[in-house]
Amino acid sequence: MMQKNPALQLFNDLWSDINEPNFIWQVLALIGCLVVAYVIAHWWRSRHAEGAGRLSDAGSRLVFPLTGMILVGAARLALKPFFHVNLLKLALPLLGSMALVRSVIFVLRQAFPRATWLTAWERIIAAVVWSWLALYITDLAPYVVDALEQVDFAIGKQRVDLWMILHGLITVFLTVVLALWVAGIIEARLMRIDTLDSSLRIVGIRVAKALLTVLAIVSSLSLVGIDMTALSVFTGALGVGLGFGLQKIASNYVSGFIILLDRSIRLGNIIQVGSEGGQVTQITTRYTVLKHPGGTEYIVPNETLIGSVVQNQTYSDSSLRLTTTVGVAYDSDLDLAMRLMVEAAAAQARVQSEPPPKVFLTQFADSSINLELGFWIEDPEGGKGNVVSDINLAIWKSFRAHGVEIPFPQRDVRIVNEKTAA
Image 1 (cartoon, rainbow, N blue to C red):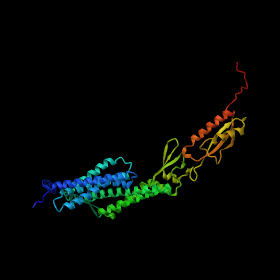
Image 2: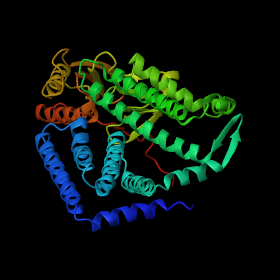
Image 3: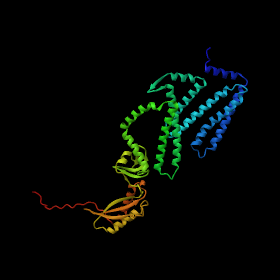
Image 4: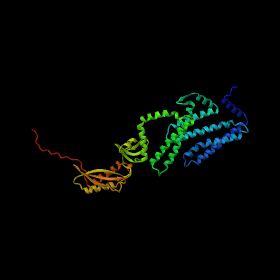
């Protein structure tokens, strides 16, 4: 005897319910459950609007479909003894699929807050979930699974079929997304701990993400039924190849963790590496970003910071000594010139009073006596050239007001023999 088509059977059941007088009670029960679920969801969102966090955001997205599932399930159990409830039976997987889609999209947005590709992925995920739901409702899912299981091949001693691969990809995707969401929660908690050093917080965040991702992949593959030992030869060969081909990248990653752990270079430090220098604005596992006061950003591999001499101007103390040199004429009052230079530096708000600015006579040059003004600032991240420029301008104005001459090179040309040839 030929079996009936599952989809046709479902439509026949729904059509028979529609033709029955009791079908109106199914419709009213479904509408009532959805209305109550909407009211509860609206109340939840209004109550958790202020101080919204990850859990409250997730609740705002899931409270409607989950509450609807609970209410529809209760209504189905209550009405089943009296008449058919095929409409409520159909509503349950629809609400469950809505909850699944919203959960996956929410976790993706939390794991990748700046990703622009999520809009397209949201449509793809929704299409996959609703397509599988259609197969489930029509009872065609077992036939599709059987067809996919018929196409199999061997990887070593492990037999793998298309259903196992598809199931594995979806499971890995969901578990990795869940792991990244948990890592995001850990990141938010660690970033709120002010007593913990910023470098240690970054290390904790990256270690948590790496461990959770590896654990998610391994556990998901095991859940699917893939024997991980079957991939040991392949992963071993791949590891050797990557070890030779990516040793520079691996070295940068290891160097990045060393920098973050020993805290020799921190965010906000002013460092100089060879000819590149600036403020440390970002430390990743592969490179460090230095921002020059002029706006140029240098991306320095972490291996360079570990294997070369680094001038860290704010390693143990943020104070920084700057200098400017001015030449005065030989007949100038040196005491007056030195006092005016000190006063010009002390008048600047960014110059520290302790230690105070000080002037040194550094050289008797050809055309001038060179005086070097040294002073300290405690905020080098605010720029060095601007404060030096302000002090130089103040010195020039003060010298002009007090008659102190800043000479420039001059040469006198004397003609010994004035006779010219006839």
